[in-house]
Image: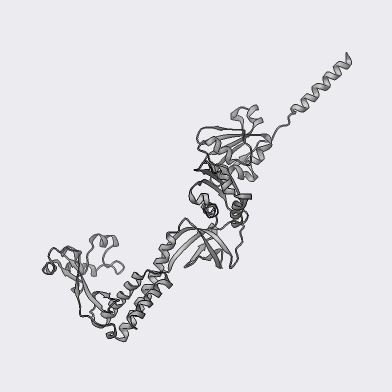
Length: 430
């Protein structure tokens, strides 16, 4: 193969595998060093090769580590090592790393006294390179060439795994698209480009069904490096998936003009988000909802019909709590001790404020960061505060909701009618 074809092949590998060109050349040079060592080197040698793509010339050096007496094991220490258990032939890992000692090998190491004769001012721990006789690639034997080929393939696979790992590690915390490739038990594997991502049962939306070939938007939780390659963990239930989906749909959020300050989510059922505008000319809720609700409906559709409430964010906790309890109307919010607030609502809004199974007040508490007690105005007006026993404390995953059954009372209207009848009877008698 001539140099031109060789260079084209390098560029092709770089583009197809997504590996930097410099890494491909570095891999080839390592393979050439292995091939040279196979045919002309000695056991224990550390070799380094350099390939000139312009001329095709290969240069090889032997690398030796400069050591002093403190860096090498003495004969006594080597004898002691022989008596240690086979599982720990050099002591514990911590001891070895602390000592940083090596077995002296003249092919790999050079005593500092000898090194100073070659290079003045050299220090222990540095490396010296010694040029070896130059050999052409065509001079390598069949076994050496096969060794070089295996090294290239192995190194390219390793670099490819590293490249994929760092690429997806940089995308952690982002929303990406994936296609369901296979389903194993309760784990879903998605093709997300150059790798497969795993959607575990814990990160799936309750009640959501998945099918092969289905395209999904997922949140990239984390990337882990393993000997078999990178493992990429995905999520469909993470609250930040909502903010990332709105970033894709709402230009004002992507540009930073509108900001999502808080998110409370019960995946698959309902979510609340609090938004604020950094530009007085922009209505944050209007921008997020979109014309005729197109923007929010796109996100809802992507989440499988999950309901989303959008409210105004406020630095004032009373205003924020009142907004968070939307769609219920709140008459007043009183701030109490220990991060607890009392929300007073009209009697006909009580069940709406609490929500089904306490969901609305639970989400409002998560959104605002406050524990919320809810009372209707009749209870607040007629009972001492210590006796008010409708209490919502959203701690953990669920809020405990206790609602006192309303006592039978005569309405003002009924009372007025009764008085009128009584007066009428008196007038007739007189």
